[in-house]
Length: 75
Image (cartoon, rainbow, N blue to C red; front, side, top):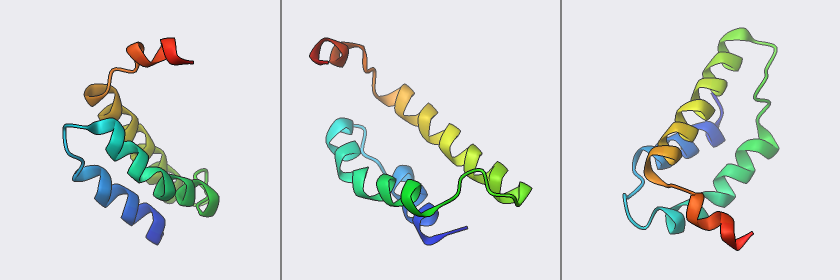
């Protein structure tokens, strides 16, 4: 597990309920660092599964707390 994974997961666990969008913007540098420095589909099966689970859990957290539908009109 990399430093980027630990930092991002730690921050995700402590996100405030409101305002989530502002918190998400604060996470952007950590999210970028994760994807720039971590091979999600690592050859090591355990690392790969752990990283994929972290991404899935993160996406579920955001879906539960942030309904993006109103933002679609801004695109």
